[in-house]
Length: 185
Image (cartoon, rainbow, N blue to C red; front, side, top):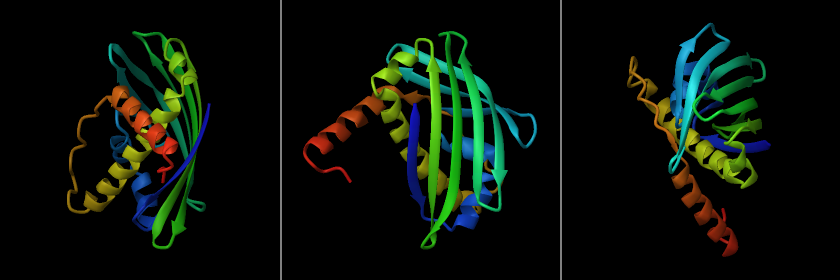
């Protein structure tokens, strides 16, 4: 499944790029994500937790990160396993930061493969709706962290919270209603 999105951060591209070089800080902006180990600047181990009513999954895995400062872009390849539920995921993510009148437009392109019990949610469109909510949360958290990072040097990252898929479903229903009544922005 391919997901392509863009969002804008009300900060200059140089500041956003500098923040993107701090992998633990970036990981703390993604709901449900937790960085477990940094093997080197390129390989990171972590986990992402999600819940859908009684369905809970905790994907543990590894991501390899490559960045290109000249183009302010990056490439991430990751894979994870939910050992309890038997699901697997594989992801390739490309991102690029672009100047946008004093702000930064972040373009992302994700290729996601799900296998095992979690794959049933991909067929329902739930993964796409989840991605929309996660990207919006990530963008909001990113901007908050960048704006407060100078004031809170040495701040310990807050514990990761699980992705609440029920909240995602409610947001998906709201989005569908807005589309039906022509109010989507």
